[in-house]
Image (tube, rainbow, N blue to C red; front, side):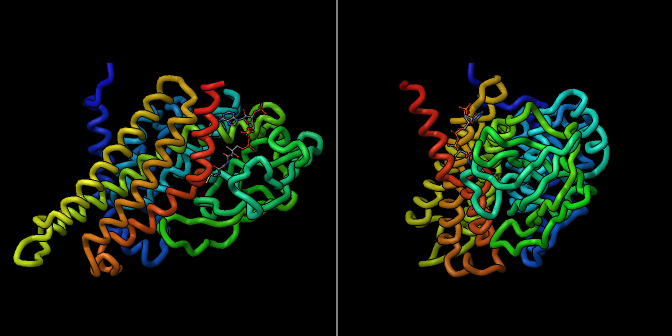
Length: 382
Ligand code: COS
């Protein structure tokens, strides 16, 4: 039976995340956005409350939540600030390759100390020469005895300036394309690991993004995840898991846009009555509500599918793609409801549009999501 009712545990989790989002994150969202400030103190509090390593099982020191429950939390956090949420959930993305490809020894050796304290990790796949064509990455891994030597550059890496650990994808032989790719866990302390300066971004300005250069960085073979050449599969399986929470993040942005637009529509008067009483505004709010509810349900369906042991490539791509497109439309309409005020930084809705835009790009652009969806669909007709 399909049941849309949350359990009492899920309701408590959602309420805890909502309280944290509204009391700790929202009051600082505008200031961090304006200044491009990385609020480390808020991320530390999120870790203290168990809101950070959501996907890591408790036996390795994480929160150990099902994907569905992670999505409930992510939507609440993103309602307050999508940028902060990106930095809070970046550990889930960076640690997922260890959960998928690591041995028991690697999981305990790497995750136990990492999760026992407040630490940040970054997922290093994208490169300056191409993000969508992940199989063509150029960062090189040369085997040298019981080490690999990494050389190359990653870009657009969330939390990279502040991370103590990186999961890095590199190739031993670019001519092999995806079959030559390996995944490595690299400590920030390693000589030759060089995070770059923070990028100035359009949105998600409370999150830090930079390049990471590897110049002869020596990584023990013991830190390779999976078998030789398994790195691409680990990256793809990671993204299957982590695209669904991006659907939840986009849903949180859309919910915030509707909350702001509906409240404003009830207090703003034109032609002698609140604009909420004009059908032009009601139609906008109705369309925004349809998009929001569909985004949430597709996200929940994808999370449910993966929690029930399926790969969920199609479902997670649908959720991420639909919800981020929906968030973009809903944020755009929220600005329209606010009129000229919506275009002003003094009001909260223009930030939502800037934040929604990234959800259409990162963790695989929405064009890539459509490729994944079409390939998965067509396979079913083979
Ligand atoms: N799970 C497991 N294996 C997968 C997989 C998945 N979800 N998707 C693909 N694979 C496997 C394929 O089965 C194939 O394996 P075999 O060689 O054994 O047949 C291999 O990986 C190569 O797959 P494919 O031929 O589909 O690779 P492409 O080079 O065509 O690329 C896309 C596929 C476009 C889907 C991939 O490059 C991609 O996801 N790009 C976007 C990257 C991204 O999201 N970046 C954001 C980084 S985080 S901000």
